[in-house]
Length: 432
Image (cartoon, rainbow, N blue to C red; front, side):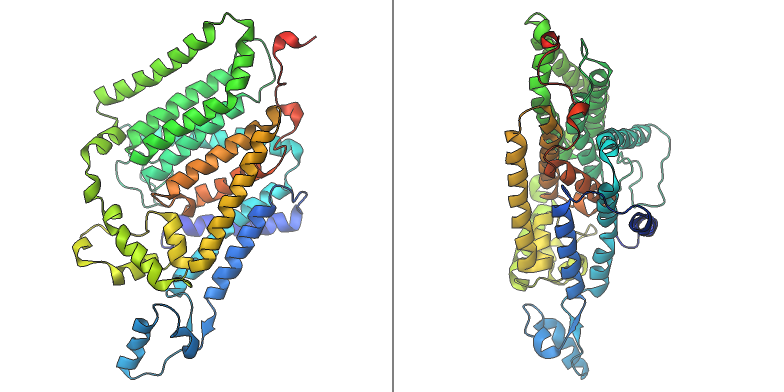
């Protein structure tokens, strides 16, 4: 939301950092970030075009504009020039929000090979710190953040929304095992593996406590994907052990996870499971509003209502049977909201993004050797963000927006980090 105090601080800091990066650290490498640059430039240009005033003869003939043009006729005023965006302030806010991903792209392009190799560690540290904030929120300690619109008593880390926090924890469930697999090969599991297992348990526990129903699915999928990506290396590590060791270890991990779920249920802290079992989907405002939102997208297609216009324009079209104290600030389906706001241009961008993901995913899984691990993990993390966006709007938050740029960079680069940073594909017994 544009009126949240944290937005001014984040965007001000992003602007300052962006200027410094442009002046002091010229970009060194474009590879891996070309797609992000093209997408950012396309979005920036398109939103800027939405702010250009159009003559009444053009504006009134755009889909869905006639009702708004009637206001001037009723008042006896001449038709003014209006921009394509029905809510210009919302479009300006959306344009300003691109400062965060633009700064991240500039930062990534300024890093050298060694710094890029350390980036997964720093991202995992950030996720772990956010988890620690969420852990503190489970206690009686009051954690009121004046910079965000967080609900009192919610376990949402440094987010205002528990679903976004649960998504971040799910991303950690993918990144942690991939990060652990990057340690130099030594006999045994190594300290990274032990730490990664502990972090995954913590992330799963916080997802349960957060109360996010979508997070339950994303967390399970993220942990499964992370384990599947590194399983060949795990199996290679255990070749020197008896065959029964690895299956027993996997069973032990599953039993620990089941124990965490049982403890959470017994302590009445598994709010996500409680909400999933207790709430009736037919009473969910987001699902009940979906037909009206789809009808709006059809009415304003192919130009859309303009960036950032959903909240006020939905109130114009909101059916009477949906009127209540709770309201929708977003469509809670970001793909649909993009089409509603940006029309055919938004639809083209979504199709292009899906095609790009398919290309980089196929390439990541065709690569041979451990250098592809981070690319595969990044591809899985993009899937998690996409799934979360189908029921919410996480990619509109500065944190997820910035992480999305980093993850996209990991997925796009053929060798995301130097090969010498990853363990060899063969087992320790094969080394001379």
